[in-house]
Amino acid sequence: MLEVGHRVQLTLHADDPLNLVTDVAPPIHLSTTFRFPSDPNDLLPSMDLIVCDFFPGFICTGVMSTPRESAPNAIRFESVLSLLIGGHTVSYSTGLAALHAALVLLNPRRISIGEGYHGSHEVISSLEEGDVILLETPVNPLGTAFSIEQFVQKAHSRGAYLMWGTDSVVHSESKYFGCHSDLPCDVLATKRQDWRKKLFEDRPAFGSVIGNLGTWLGLRSLRTLDVRVECVSKSSERLISWPHQGLRRAWLREQMPNGFGPVFSIVLQSEDLARGLPSKLHLFQHATRLGDVESLIEWRALSDSRVDRMLLRISVRLENWEGSKNDLFQTFNSLVLQA
Image 1: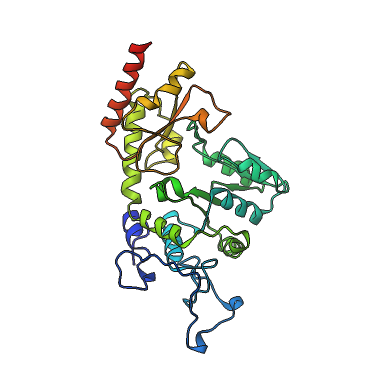
Image 2: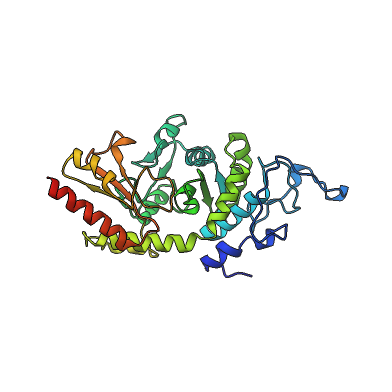
């Protein structure tokens, strides 16, 4: 049995018991339907099937019907994530689909939310009011962080649920679990088995199941998750500490003991500088962030009309951090000389 706390082993081997073939790399399953067992004794009505505790989404009999309910790589993908996150995990085709599923599950009367994931407010406006706090931290695009512990205490003292905290968590699969610019996907994790069961049952009705290729891409990317996250976390902290030494809040280091996120923003002195800087860089791609191995920079006004037009959002990835620093430094110098 694998040690649950060992992330590297989990990403590589947590789904080994579910391997149905001799291939080392999981094969891509394109079928939209699966044969039922030939032995009549193995045929059980859907209402009698039991979802396994250890492998969320996996029917204990091994019976699969269509990918709307379960498929080989979807089962493996969600099983690895469940052990990594430490909660029952259900995957969705988009972030807003995951958010919608969570709010339908909770059916709250009042919702408390600040800035956060694009589209969240639009989803909420179509639902009834309710008692739930939606907490995003760090907040995009400024990287502002909030103490999860404080919000947990506030929510639970009033009998409310806290999403993005202890009751349920939404992870953007595209950004880190996927991180190869080819997988739009989100996952919803909860410690409550009854919630997981309801989410699993609701997902086909919402039409938010990930396709077979998507779950294969997700499983492929999870194999290198630990080394990628460690690399980008160290590089981003070094890069941020180069011009700024203010990242010293004790609660933040306690909340994120394994490193900080690789996304931060800078504000230049004019809109023209912010518009022109990205095209002068060599290592940073001028593009919006959606899970990449290459470092990105974005003049954020192109995709968000609410932000300061002098703001640039930077996403540090797998390049050597000194090379990224030199790229930024040389570009800053060239702009100063032109001024």
